[in-house]
Length: 367
Image 1 (cartoon, rainbow, N blue to C red):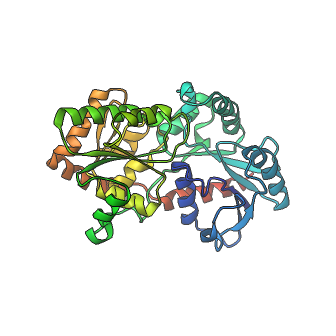
Image 2 (tube, helix red, strand yellow):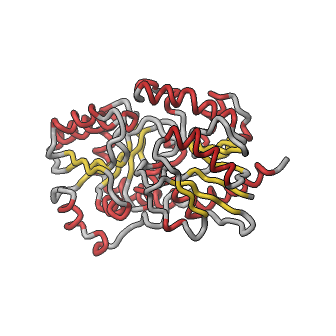
Image 3 (cartoon, rainbow, N blue to C red):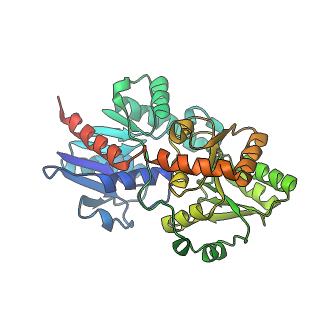
């Protein structure tokens, strides 16, 4: 088979979307009889994939030109049998297509997207769901959501779980080098609470900041909240929340994976207040690094975390504050969660998802 994979998200620091594709690609075992073409942006570094895939670069960084003009031309040029895209598919295509749809949050929370982005998703994602031969998604919750909204056959939607790679692990003190880490990110000598996710409305950071500030006032604890993630969209409320207690809240922006592993390891605890997730990789990364976690009790997060974390209502600031207090002060609970977290992260493996994806490509060739 000639297989085409739209890898436009590689190198764009888009969080879970990029992590999904980069780790699946690393874990793929390509059949020698297949040719797999990886379509990437003009200026991205993809040298790690060159031995396994045929690298083809888009001419433009424009998402419109890429999706609706270039992909169709590339599929014709390289005689692609099946194309794998993310969220959107071309309107005109000379081959079969499979599409990864991580979640359909916009169907539930219209107001947390710009009007332009909402309209784009409302038109293009249902179209992709209907026209794709198969749909990959990242949890059973997301699968059921897609089936319910778009009335597609259940067997058409295939769960390919996210996971964590081996980089995310418990570090020894020398590798962690907590003093250097804190100095670089302007973290004080006290403990810090960590959260990870791009700055956008559904990550629910204003409520987390309110809960953290309230906990600080009530306990007078010397602690900081470290927020890792690049600015995505509609983040003005987050920045306004930070400005009220700037010495206690640290925004790191995007950080490398090496630094992220160290930040997980150095944290007293990890908290994830996002109220809608197709999967939610950061809690799993935290568990792999031996950091106790608390997450929202919504969407896919209970499916991912299992009994290895504590839960809270993400819309209830009081419950978030209580979760912070338990994570930061209950040592017995922390030890229990750490042990359970190491076991829970083993449930998910990139190799399993990569194998499922490759197998599905070949099913597309069946009559």
